Image (cartoon, rainbow, N blue to C red; front, side, top):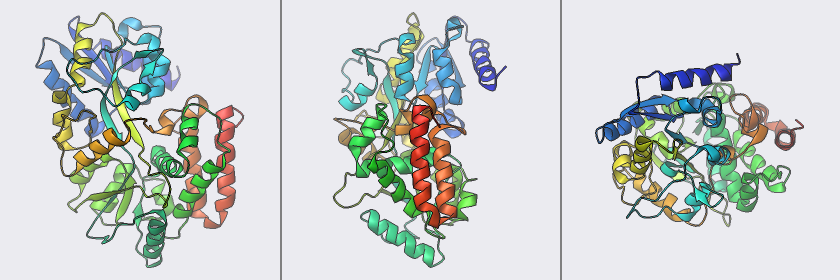
Length: 410
């Protein structure tokens, strides 16, 4: 039995053997750790509203297999929280179309389009994410850069003075793809959107320009706390600890959901600025999110949960602790200035959402944990960070790998 099949079997057995029963509600998502605990709190609040016993499973990277499973449909969950519109598109024949909440403000059209297929909307956004941020310590960084060139110069100056400016969790491949996606959005949002629709444009000059931009930053000698080899062994939460607990560097790129980890693991003050672009370029706003989808058409409990997750009451407890942004303007219970980030996601994405590119890719590029874009960008990071003189060759190699993988020839 392959590891993936074993995980899927475990997932199904867990869901059916958890004592949910006929009146039980089976829910699956991809969160773990602190986020999974917060979602359990959300489900506990829901269970108090009705007669249903709720069972929750974290499916991790096997969610796509679970949603598409045709062998044991009776063991399928009632509701899934899906972080990738591409998974919703692939599984839409197993999903139940959603219905709007009466009296609720409509979600921005760009977000609704991400869940619309064949003229029907499948699911609603429970949690969204702002992924164009640089978190920093104001006690270690007195002035924030106004654009990319100022940021590049600042990082170079700090590194030359023996003060590493950045921490990075390069062990998590999505951290590196987020850098690239923000850079490409700055340079050429049109090519970004075409790549997200499956166009094989990896040899486009803008892709090379984005790689060269982040590669120039990553190749600054001394730019990363602990050096590039340690960075490749550090996960994103470890990079936050490096900055806000140990003070190894003043800055770390990331998302709004970094906030609760910062608060739990550090006493230093935390602020953010938007991921910098060059003057005259597009200001990037990279978005992510988790949509609640319904899998069982005859499930009263599942329909009730999906409807409830679209209400402010469901979002407020988690939003108040940080790490969850809502598209609903009625949710205002955010810590610090997190409400500003929610407003940016609503207002700047009203006409179109630049959703996380790696979460929209299909085929071999969609692979992670050693495959697809994550692996390609980890190899690119290692090449430029450990050998700055190899930037040109590393850019060419990364372009070839991305293009070849997208076409199935690499």
